[in-house]
Each structure stands twice: as structure tokens, then as C-alpha cells.
Image (cartoon, rainbow, N blue to C red; front, side):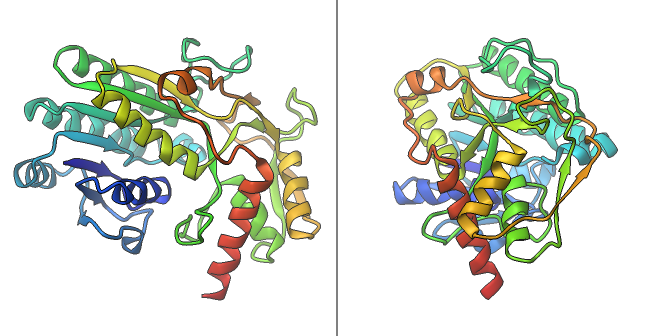
Length: 324
């Protein structure tokens, strides 16, 4: 059985949906702090925190768990700068507690949701997995520390692990059944689409003096469906005898904030009012993935490698939410 932590969230719910479609046996645990119970369908959801020893004991004693997909975490970079203790507790400490249980119960396979934030400010693009990790914010530090713990636990046991370093996840389920549901969001594409729909009066752009093509930050945006599929491919890889590894999850193509704005304006036929603000603490100028390794090792072929497709799916999802 597979344990999915954070499986009611934006990315986790997409992974759970795909696992259910493949008739996998799974149980989801989520504290619902940034997610919705309704996102989990056709499998059991345990409401609780993986940092709670009672919850952990119940999960591992009540279910025959032999594989774990670990997504539960705090993820907002700017918040991590203001409240680092929360991130070290939720991300690093709770991961260590979960891994201790995994070691105790001889878990076979562990898939970890990490982040490109572990790299920090990089000069050589696209970023390869062997790049020296030098995070510039507590979020990145908390995830890198978790990666180190996972690597050490795997080395000392029979557990194998795949660490997936996400770049910028965006979009929604093309069927309009799942997507980001909470009102508060810092995701650029979502904020831009909501601005086009009149939910926000303007779009804030943080920094226009970066050393990039137009002065705004550049990111590698990846569709949430493709991210979810990478986890299923990682599971297949480990089950077939694959060794532990770390992989980037991105497309290898970067878009600036202003390029995203233009794409949203094209799809929605709305001119976006923007406001330029100073750079946010902890934001690097440009982060673009090398996706060669994940495509080769996991035989991963993204379906939605297209900014306009990502924007379109996000737009129809947000439009639907407005009508509810």
C-alpha cells in the first residue's frame, strides 16, 4: 500500500487521482491546512499531521504501508523568510519523523517532493542535478536538509528513494475537476489569470531590474499533470529495481514574468494592469531545469509542455471557481 502525505493539496490530489485510476491501493494523510477534503476521491483520507506521533503510529500500524510519496510541506518562499521556524518544523523535522517510521517498518520505496529552491542563485543554465546546492531562503534550506536525511536513511537501509526537484508548477486538470482551490495564492500564473477575471485590481510584479531578458524573473513552468505523472513513473522505476536518484522536474524552457503576462493577455483577451514592486527576499533571478536526466531515467515524456496550454487550463479552472 502507498502512503501519500499532503495528498489533498494542489499537486498531491493530482497524484492521488492518477494512482486511483491505475487501481493502486493507497491511503492519504493531510492536515488540510492548505488543502481541501473534497480533493481526495475514491480512497481513504486521514486528517492529521505527519509530525504527530499518534497519527504516524496509527498509519504504520493500521495499514500495510510499503511505499511512501511525501509531499506534505510548507511551500511559500516569502513566508519562509519571515517565519523560518515553521518551515524547519513542517518540512525538515516532520520529514525526519516520517523517515524514522519508514526505517522502522522497512519501507521499500520513498518518493520525495523537493524543489529547485535547493539550488539558489545559479549562473549556469539550465540547471543540472549535479549543480552545487546553495539555497538562499529557509524554504530551500529546509528541503535540502530533508534531502540529506532521506539520502542517509536510504544508505543505511534497504529503502530506495527518488527525490524530485520541482520547478514552477502551474495549471489545472484539463477536465476542470481539480486545481488550486484556496483563495490565497502566490503562484504567478494563477494570480495573473485571476487579475484577468477581475478578482484582483492589478498584478504585482516583484522586481524589474534582474539580469534577465526584460528585467523580470525567469522561471521554468511545468503543468501539474506532468508533475503528477513523474511521480507515477518514479514509482514504476523503483519497483523495477531502479537505484536511488535525484531528478529535476521541469521542461528546460524559461519564461519571464512579462512573457507570462503576455500569454495570459492573449488567452483571456484582457489587458492586465501591473504594478512593479521591489524584489522579494529569497527570489533568484532565473531558474531553468535541465530535464535530460528525468526523461532518460524515468522515461518521462511531458504532455503539456506549452505555456499557453498551462495558462488556458488555469483560466478555465479559475473561471469555473467564480461560477460556483
